[in-house]
Length: 103
Image (cartoon, rainbow, N blue to C red; front, side, top):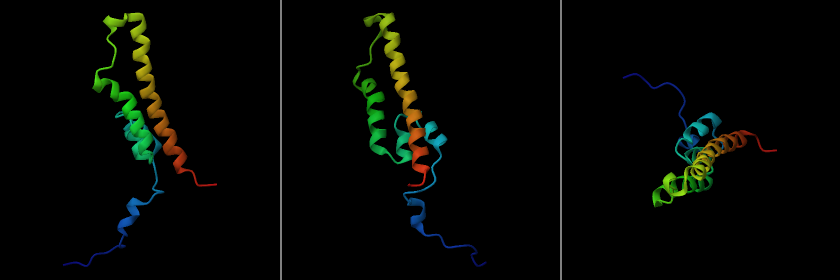
């Protein structure tokens, strides 16, 4: 049996509040709305984005294009996609801002 070599790592190191964050990973995780915010350390904001984007789909409040006519339905669909895009951008921004040292 060979002796172990290397440092003994404190188990709490991986749970530090100021762990290095990757803003790109936060944006990529936002493919699931809110997951990027959760990664970046803003779980309440992530939950709000998740509820705002997925909630209407779950309760059946999304609008059918045949009911509201095509000219009105397309902007509403683009609004949901726009919110999803903003969710990814905001997760990126949140992770980037949490990387900065405190002033």
